[in-house]
Image (cartoon, rainbow, N blue to C red; front, side, top):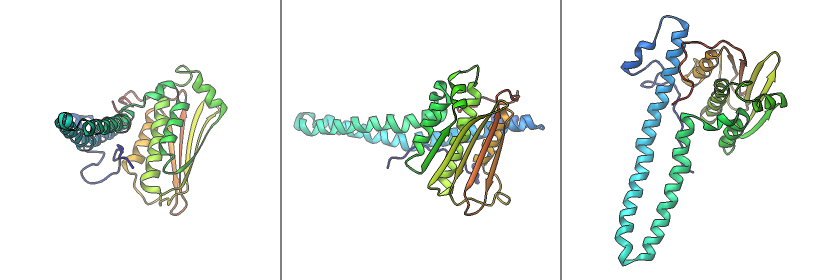
Length: 263
């Protein structure tokens, strides 16, 4: 199985969400809006660090190996053209994999370009990425589909992106921690003017009354609050986890919130 970039959003020593580069530490403020902005930027910085490590370690090592293979191929051109041709085919195939798997995954993490086509196709694409790891049942109601088809005026891109990021983080948690075999994802439009995303898995769950929020769970909450929404996470040991996001179409947006993409 190929290795793909997975941002490490767990809270652990050396990668806590409150550790920022020196030039960003001034963002931490004394009011809730500034603190929310600071936490989102901290999460973005954490993903950027992971991305840099992935590019430097994983992708660069692949490219170095392919460069060495090309050198060997060049040496074989005169004495064994057939072997050189086969080697060149393998190099071309590996380069295509780097483009299709590694670079596309990093690009998608920076900004899911498909979101510009609509949240419905973006969610279907997101679910397909995780479908090899768990059985995922995606339901999107007709009212939501119509809202999405109406475009930016009906469903602004920032709200589409928040729903996408919360769903992505919840599915990441299923992959990393829940050991779930199935997940139900629901996306509905609820009067008056609310978007509701729910994800329920059959994994190991956890004691939500005792567990402190890791960076991933905290980031879901911060994203929702950035646009006046809210999240609800319900879990019990051995009984799976339920994540619910409610986002108003006309919710107030905090002026202190940075860009919601990783770019």
